[in-house]
Length: 408
Image (cartoon, rainbow, N blue to C red; front, side, top):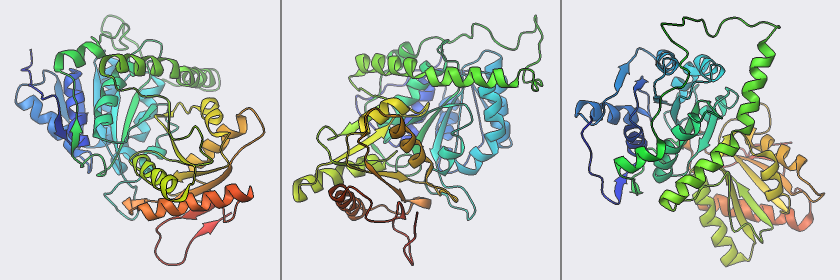
C-alpha cells in the first residue's frame, strides 16, 4: 500500500502539480512518458511520488513519445489503468499511436499541456497540438486553470473507463498560463478521490495468455468502415456519460461543470467564444464593457472539444447578434478550426436568427492577448450587431507585428 499524503484544504499548486496529484490519487498501474516542455513537471512530480513511496504503480521511462504511447497501449491492453503526459512535438510524434489506442478502445488518460508546434521552434503555449489531435478518436476535455486541471484529471478516468464509453481521453490545459501558474486548488483527500474514480479492472483485457489473439490487424474494405463507424458512434454518444460524471463530481465537491458554459449570456447581444485561459480574460473584458460602455457582452466556452456539442451549442448561440470565435492556432490556409465547428453548430440550430460571425487568430507562440485587445473585439462586435453585418474582414490576426493581416 502506498504511503498517504496529507493534503491541506487549500493547496497552492500550478496546473502541472495539480495534474500530477490527480494521477497519484487515481492509483495508476502504469505511467509511461518521455519529458517535454511544458508538461515535464507532471511526470517528474509523478516520478518523485514513486520514489518517495506514495505510488505503487510502475513508471516506464522510454526513448520517445512514440514509445511512451506504445507502452501505454500495451499496458492498457493488458488491463491496467494507464496515463501519460506530453506537449507539442512530443504529441505530434505520438499521433500514429493515438489512432491505435482509440481504435482498440483503450481508456488511456493523456494530460496534454498545450504548446505551439514547430517550425519555428517555440516552447510556449497555443492550441496547435490540441487541434492536431482532434480527429484521432479521443475524447478531448478543456480546462481553464489549475483547479480544473485537477478536477478534470480525476473525472477523465471515470469517463474513459466507463463501459458505455471505453475511449481514451485527453485533458487539455494551456502551457505556462495554466501549467506553470500557481493558484489556490481545493483537492480531495486521497480516499475520497479514489472512491470517486473507483476500482479499475478491465472486464475484458485484450491481452490474455490463455486466449492469445491479434489486435490492430488489417481490415481492408471488408470491415474497416464498420470499425471506424462504431468508434464515431460511441464518441458522439459519450456526452451522456460525461454529463453524468460532471453531475457526480458536483454532488461530491460543489464544483459544477457543463458541456457548454456561459457568462452573462442570458441578455447578451454580442459574445466571445474561446477555450482555455482566454475564457477567464474574456469574462473580465465582458464585465468591463458592460459597466463602462453598456455593451451587452457575454462569453461562451465548451468543456468538451470532442465530442463537439453541435446542437446544444447552436441553440445557446443562435440568439446573439454578433459572435467572435477565437482560434489560438494557425489556420494554415483556412478559417480557424474552432470557427468552422461553431459555424456548423449554428447552421444546424433551430430558427432563422444567427449572429454575424468573426474569426480572430491570436496568441500564437503565446503572444499576449491584452485586455485592450478583448475590449476592441467587443466594440467591433457591437458595430457588427448594430448594422447586422460584418464591418471588417471575417478573419483577423490580433497582436501581430507589422502590417495588419485579415482575410475573407
